[in-house]
Length: 194
Ligand SMILES: C[S@@+](CC[C@H](N)C(=O)[O-])C[C@H]1O[C@@H](n2cnc3c(N)ncnc32)[C@H](O)[C@@H]1O
Image 1 (cartoon, rainbow, N blue to C red):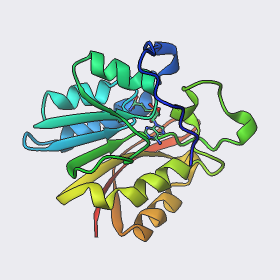
Image 2 (image 1 turned 60 degrees about the vertical axis):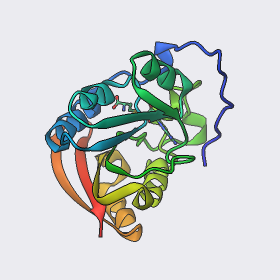
Image 3 (image 1 turned 45 degrees about the horizontal axis):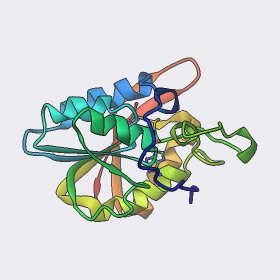
């Protein structure tokens, strides 16, 4: 369980403390734009600078953007998005037709952590899968009937073990898009309840 700093209502949104959209963002956005429908109620976990939530809000019935990082939620709110600051699904009771998450997936030892809130964008725990596994465990009770999720994963976090974790949570996963870079392969998993 990550340590969650208390909410500081007067905090200013510091862009340097928010993940800057990268190849993983763009691959997930492409898959999400292909997947979303006009009637969908969408939840983006870990919205960062809210690029994906903003694009989806032009196509979906509803988009809720969440992040554990208060700089990110403040930025999303300033862009007019419905926003919740939360650790994954904590305190979120509604179910959604589409859940989207580009998680922190880098294997990170305690001494490798970055200072500040940006660490939450990168630090996947020692295995790279710590946040992903907690996400998969919470997902089933937040999917509406027929609901689906798109999860960005990297070869850094051993994708077959992510799929095994999904199975243990009662979820099926298929690869719907992938891209290879010289240092990693990124995949988008489409996940549904079994
Ligand atoms: C790799 S960044 C992706 C940001 C953005 N969605 C994008 O694709 O550019 C991961 C995001 O997840 C957020 N995050 C990490 N752990 C989280 C948690 N337990 N609950 C909610 N958000 C979390 C981070 O703060 C960060 O904004």
